[in-house]
Length: 482
Image 1: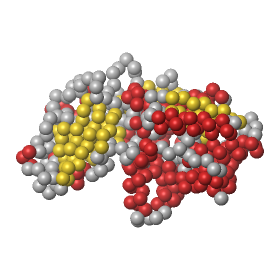
Image 2 (image 1 turned 90 degrees about the vertical axis):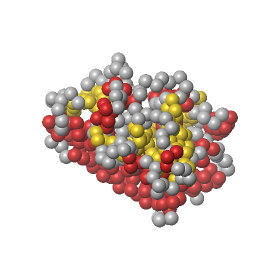
Image 3 (image 1 turned 60 degrees about the vertical axis):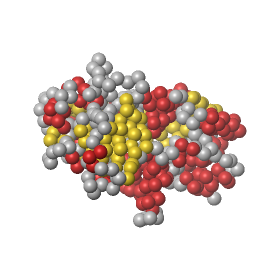
Image 4 (image 1 turned 120 degrees about the vertical axis):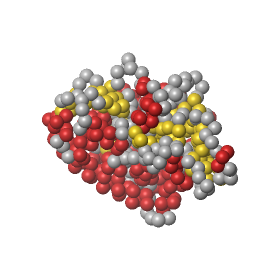
């Protein structure tokens, strides 16, 4: 029976985390779907036996109108029937997304974590329980790979982890269902006679995770029917390797790193003497301690920081979440940006192909079209619209701001040049260069938006499908980057 297996799995996680005691307080995040509902039901049965205190938290993201409100009402009724105290809140995630310059998926995740961590702190919580399953784990491994992860990203999610609220405050997160499949959580709910809510947005392929779930994983399953289990094993192997690396980093960290008022300072010479792998994980730890998590930090950004440590003093590099990487003669540091300086750069965002994606003050529209046009009619309509070869670019496209060392092969040229030189020649003001969106395909710059596409991305006589890509400034924004 699914209930017996799930209860056993959840109990093991609680035992490992030292949470099966009467003085412990566990907050369960509950959306109303099968996964979080199965988690709540299992925790409720265990709380009755081991006497820890159980609360529930539910965030209404206001994304699906009446459907979202119905989810909230459903969770309220379930918690009332179980006699579990529920904390709930309604937020405008779209406004939160624009405020923090995030994708909609990332904004919903961060808003949910902030809400649950606030509730957990208010009730003196020992841990926050989330209902991620083995299906979510497999999807996260693939999502991180697509975003450009290092080894740490292959770990995906762990059964027990800490989320940094501040430099001195950490919230324990448990994910007891990582060895449980979504089908098993559905079976658990069926056994107990409860019909979970169905989130219609889970079928919206405008979201990257949904395209991975409904398109990529079924395709991979034709090569390996056990692909989800395989990816979960990969995550576990990466978890074991990272655990060992973190032990080594913990030995080195207090010898070379110190906290400052707004950041972390690391001795430069000692850092440069470390193995490249240890260097990467030292930088990751510094950022993690300051930002709370490393969701928006990728291996390319880690590489850019490492590159600057071997160069002269006075170098800097902008990081996600409002942090800067800085070098001096003796130290390297990651610190909060000076709020008095206007910043334009943004983190890498995955785009829907085809489809529309919003980030910051832009809307990106991508349309595929069979190539039935004369090449002479495919000149770039204006600076924000372009035609490019679908076969050359593929379906995995992202947009980001510039990085140190970026190179670009402009249309009409047969070789690459430094992006910085291209921007200087095209008279892009120094203070606006971080605001110029770059369309990225296969790790290369396909379009410096507002200026020129790459020579290799152009439509040719051999092109069968065209990508029509357009960038539109959203209402209320100001076009000062071009």
